[in-house]
Image 1 (cartoon, rainbow, N blue to C red):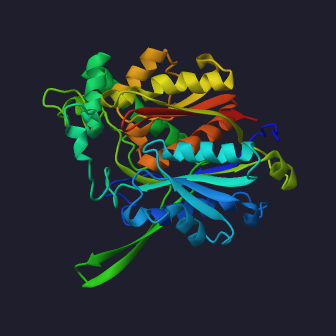
Image 2 (image 1 turned 180 degrees about the vertical axis):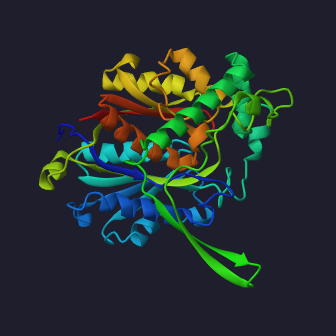
Length: 399
């Protein structure tokens, strides 16, 4: 028997501040504890919802091993104090893992299999580096008839995008500087407050004078990577890090980071039962594959596909969180799709704010739904390129 699809509503969205890896404020916090903080903060923001009504917790993680392995979703849910009846599953689509978790949660609600699901993402690049602790590539990738680009480092793919789409070093640096300036303005204006749940940090530090170990407590409430004092002159001095004669530098690339984000999605029935006010409706999701050697152009394929599913056009987007894996690929996407720069990353992107891989989709979704509400814009999107050659895009509608 067929049934009509239901709507999936986002009623709460929050995230941790993003810490710099591997030496930032969150370096000693386990990724499951980052997830716990996001989950507890999320539940606390909707006190009228009975946690026992939550059907599942879906968590994105790009490197699900070590301290973020062993099904971190289920472990995080239990450590956060959710009832044992609440299940958990970890999903991995690299940088789109968090966004994929949201899409999966929305799908289960829309087809009537669930009424309330938490979609989240967590990643500690301080504790589990990009590629994992013990990467093991299939030797067949290096056979003559194989696509060796699957084994390319992400920086090399950015260099290839910059070359093919003719994105200059000067343009990349200018884009990076704009990211920092927009993020600094947003922090100074308090625009991130609605989405960030500050996190308390305790560190033990040796006191060489007294010979004792002192306990230091502080609260992190802002993303650590923003450099308000950055300049074109400073960025121009940085050397390429992936190709000797290349244009991609540490300054025009995303920062390695630690963080987590979480959203609560519910059906219309739960919306009415608990008298909830929705932040947004999840509209559509698309993922597309592209050649691995130019993986950064993935959004060029995914964004039009998500818009088509939603019956929308590019001009309908009032807010677009385009993950800044590299300035080169971001500019290639913006130019190829003729995106309005005014709606792309209005509060800065991953070059300034950081990119905790599998958590980024959930984090940037929190940015979109709160940003749409603050600015009264109608439709927003989260999109990113994905390792091994993919692009993903999800659309949200403010209600």
